[in-house]
Length: 312
Image (cartoon, rainbow, N blue to C red):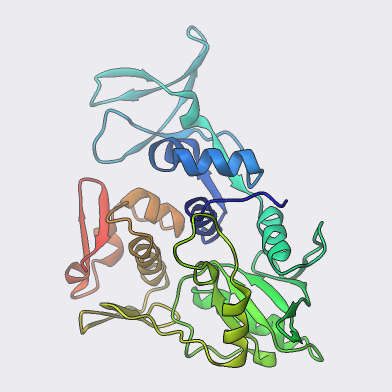
């Protein structure tokens, strides 16, 4: 630890942390995050995962994924592409996966708060909530927690249930990789929520947690509501864009909305539709099938050429 990490790379790690499995494919790293991915690998934040068999058809512009198979003659993997009208060799990076090392991320957070390294985080809810320690923030000792996927209704419930079982701790902060509006959230123990992204001082190249901002949050002087054209509820069931409100009831629909909101907040104008559907474990092969029962979803979500996006 003690190494600097760019804000862009930390944003990538936070994005991966919000997936059902904090993992990314090698093709996504090489296509979209080559610089950030290389830095995360060098620092040990990303580690090699299992080899993947479903790979992108590079000859297809719709972003289709196909199954690769071993070719003994060429001693490499290949797939059959209708668009290429034949067999296509698979680039090595397309077979790779990279797993986010959650302990590395929590260790970096703990170090920022002055906790002893190596950190020994205590899991309070499996794969969802950890207690990192009780650091001093300003003139008070506070409980420090790390949580991910807090924007999903199931994640919120799990965190609340876990915190209800703890008592006698000082009020503290729930640091999360989820980007969501927190002003209506209430947690046992009077713990406050802060998005990791909001901890970074503006105008700096490297990621750093502004402990003064955390202290302001705990004292009740921080401002949480974000200005802009987009507002949404904690569970993504209610979305307002430029004054127009949309309501969603299906769990998968709300999860897709959360992914698109996170992408928009990162500045990504479009996201591959298949990646969105895979990230929410949907059986649908097209976004139109997932939302076809919703009366006005097409006025909120744009789609085409294998991509989808929020119409903001």
